[in-house]
Length: 271
Image (cartoon, rainbow, N blue to C red; front, side, top):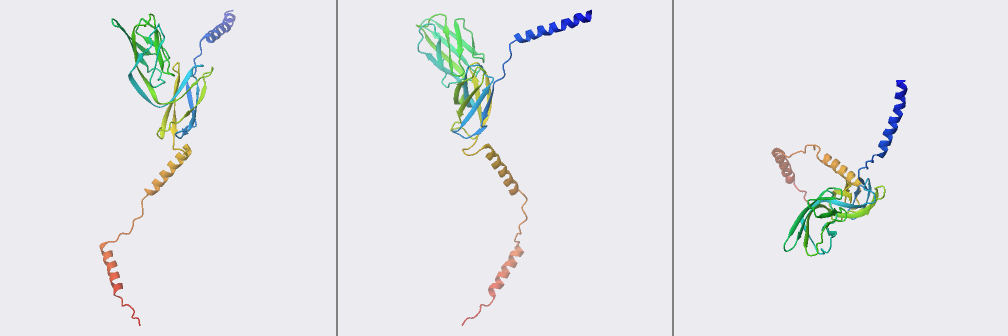
């Protein structure tokens, strides 16, 4: 009887577990980008394909090393109403998680300051009780906030710090499945060698890959072949060379005497 109860309970437990698992949110795949081709010359095109990005969100594709900016000032020229009040970074797209800005709202009699810190997911946390919906857009470089009371008679300045990338590539939008494909041009000023390619979206999904920049007309296979040939030539050159015969002092004297004897040979008399 006990065995029968146990056998009837097991399917019920499995059914409940299945229902519970089905209701849990599925984790999204990590963002990933691939480059085609993996090596390319300056001024030529490379296809960047991405998966695992946020569905239907804008994506920025950048190239080159990271560059840090501090205390970039943005006075807000139109302070009418309650906002939103928006500024744009001087260098465009922003590395997710790197952004910060300081807000100063002042009048002749009052100054209110507040700070905004990047959460890395497209949202900002603030120390101000008056801040309303602070925001940052990593792709466009837009940032700002609204306010609970009008700023009509106030002077407002945003001062920001962030990280950007040496070369702006292009912008695109991920599909409903979080995928995208876009072409970027290798900068004409990029050095030969490794060039970092970075892609991220407005929600902070991000991935990095590397491109081999080669001189125009050189494929990666050709570069490898030339490198191998150079190594072979170097090895042959560095092999132990056979000893060369050196002319000693005695040999030089004998050689000189021989030439002297030959020069004494009487010349034939003509006529």
